[in-house]
Every structure is written in structure tokens, then in C-alpha cells.
Amino acid sequence: MSVELAAPEPKTSRWTRRHLLGLEELNRSELETILDRAEEFVEVSQRRRKKLTNLKGKVVVNLFFEASTRTRTSFGLAAKRLSADTIDFTTGGSSLSKGESFIDTAKNIEAMGIDGIVVRHSVPGAPHLLAQHLQCSIINAGDGAHEHPTQGLLDIFTIRRIKGRLEGLTVGLVGDIAHSRVARSNIHGLLKLGAKVIVCGPPTLVPQSITRLGVEVSFRLNDILPRCDVINMLRIQFERQRNGLFPSVHEYAHLFGMDSDRLKLAKPDILLLAPGPMPAAAE
Ligand code: CP
Image (cartoon, rainbow, N blue to C red):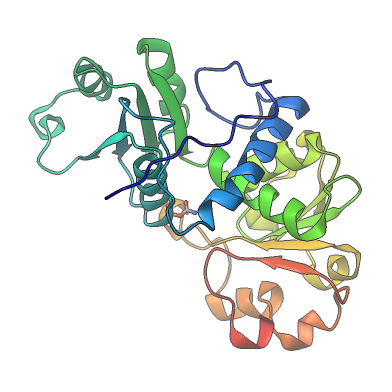
């Protein structure tokens, strides 16, 4: 027998948007509303029975035009835990192969009585286009090199949980800043919540224009490590790069990789975030 419970009532109700398209458009209060609400769900995720009824009767579609493991799986799991009906759309075998456009595909899916679409696409702005043409809620699960708001929120949530605050922290984002949607979402969210952000990587992977967002730029990880409370190691986005943006993976790892020797330069309580398991020496 399954026991379904209602989620805790939100302590705050400052969320009035239909869509979640990026962290750039959110203000501090909206960001804090999401983080506080996520905090209320931590207790739920630690229960033996995690099934809630918040989305009972709703239908959520995962519409992914790019590969994904973590985002697709976690959105699917979250929707199921909240009792939504879920549909996984895959491009292979769909009418896209017969020439149907992106918008027509999404409109056809919406016409089946869909309440929310979680979309990942290689083109920046694709979720915004859907939000203009559809009535249902759109959640951006990553659009090209533009934004990945839910990954940004998860990183920020993790930092706030472990460090106890965001205000006054110095966060280093290290790696392929030029092609990273995770970097952009982190930057928008962290700056609005009072953190300082330093972006660091080889000059070919750190565009000068990024300073317009209000971040400091460094090309030397060893120089910024002693100043950082948090380091977020970003993946190299080989699939979005032209060739030759750095001489070799070996040289990149030498200058920007994390290991036990380099860690000696960091504050003793530094928090390291990474997209996958860290090498044992740097854990
Ligand atoms: N973090 C992230 O976007 O991972 P996936 O590409 O596996 O979804």
C-alpha cells in the first residue's frame, strides 16, 4: 500500500512566475524563496516514504534535445515523487525526423493536456521561445551555453547548506567559462545573493566580456585558491568548442586540475564542487 502525504506548506509565498527560464531574471527574494522551499524538502527526501501529492493530476514532459544523465533523471524522479504523470520525449523516432519544427512539436505535445515542459536544447533561448508560444509552464534544463538555472540553484543551495551563508563568500568558478551555462547561472545567482565570484581558466576559455556581469577574472588557479571559500570545478565542454582552445588536456590538468598539492594552497575549510567524483587525492 502506498502512503501519499502532502508536502509541508510553504513558509514563504513570493513565487509568482509561471516559468523558470534563468537566474538572470530572478531577484534576490525569488532566489531565496526557491532555496528556502528546497530546504523544506530536505526532510522529505530523508523519509522512508517520499511520495507527496503536490502535482497529483498534473502531467510533466521531459523534452530533451541534448544528452543528459543527472538533469533528466532528477526531474523525472522529482515529478514522480510529487505524483505527477511524466512523459519522456526522445527526438529519435519522433516526427522531428519527418521535418516537424521545434515549436510545432512542442505545441502538439502541449495540446495533449500538458501542465509543464522541462526542456534542454543546444540553442540558447529555446526555452524562452517555448514560453512565448505555449501556455504551460516551461523549465529550462540547459540552453546551449546560456543558462542552466536548476544546476545553478543546486550549486548555490549546496554552498548555503554547507557554509551556512552566501553573503560575503568568495566563490571561484574554474574551467571552461566561455561555454559553460552552469557558470552563467552560478554567476547571476551568487552575485544577487551577496557572494563575490572569481572566474578562472585559460585565456581562451574565459571571455573578457564576462567582467560585465560583475565578476573578477583570473588566469592562475594558484593565485586565487588562498582567497576562495568555495571552488566550483567546471567540466570542459568539448562538444561546444572549436579545436585548439588549449594545447593539451595534460597541460590543462597541470594548470587547472585539483590535486592534493594544489589543495595545500587553499583555505583549510574550502568547499570543492565538481560535476563528477573528485580524484581521491582531492576529496
Ligand atoms: N549537470 C548536468 O546538467 O548533468 P547532465 O548533463 O547529466 O544532465
